[in-house]
Length: 357
Ligand code: CUA
Image (tube, rainbow, N blue to C red; front, top):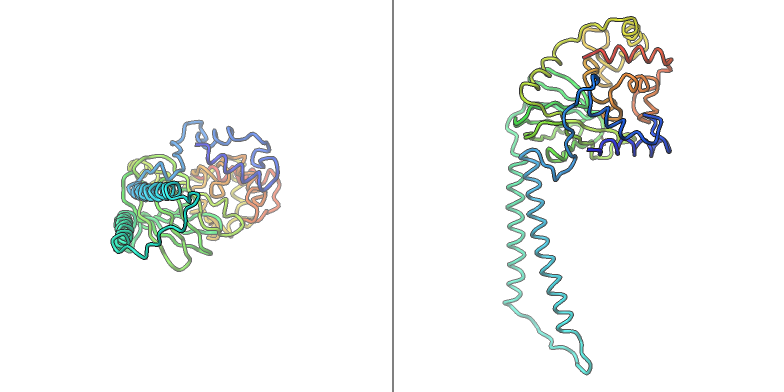
């Protein structure tokens, strides 16, 4: 449960010395954890699942885990058998004082057949078990329309739901118990989509779509990460998969299709103007506004997300203000420049963006 907090903090510590820049303290794990498990109204959020391949929450992840146990058991039996025989031979046939050269056996057809056939059978068993697992985890894709197109970018994730037209970033919403097909692509370099609790690790390669089947069997928030080194901010390319009941998922999908009402209030209105004047809109889209950029994540419903910067920071007004003032401080090397805004300008933009739900 504390995994995310630990990773976030260790990354920040590694990058910026002894204090966590996000909270400007060395003891921010509980604070971060609170933020991540409560929403902005202080209501508990969905359960954060263990980020472990041993906590498998889909038939695909379970099949991989079972194959691992099967291979481990066979390897253990082989290891114990070979180690015992070696130990026995070393003790039983050790050289004793006054003994000459041992008897030289030129060959034993029966034994040789036996130790060829047994490994062949073991390999056959492994092959059958692996082929069966591949069939469960990665069955042939006969349809061309995925439920979600996952597009990896340096260093964030874009999710497009072609059936409904929903477009979002970094947080993938999925309904419980539905067998979904994900198509993985990349806009730049090779990335790798991996959510250990849900399924296999699959590369996102430019110009070569790969497919991944996932059937989540438990609601909650699953953490994953980019698992292929893809440049400076590879370590902060987190994935959150939010598995909801069908009704909740449908409600979320409908909310994403609605254009949020124009935020009101002096700060938000000033923020909206600044967003258009200060070139933010060259990179980001906000539906029903002049902002049409596609370089960075779509921000139409950014206020709705749990985290920012691909899981780099919790989505709060304070953190968003810091992010807008200097993203390079939080995610050095990321493609969003510092726009040299004053704190009050950054604050107004953050107020505007947080209202977009
Ligand atoms: Cu994307 Cu590593």
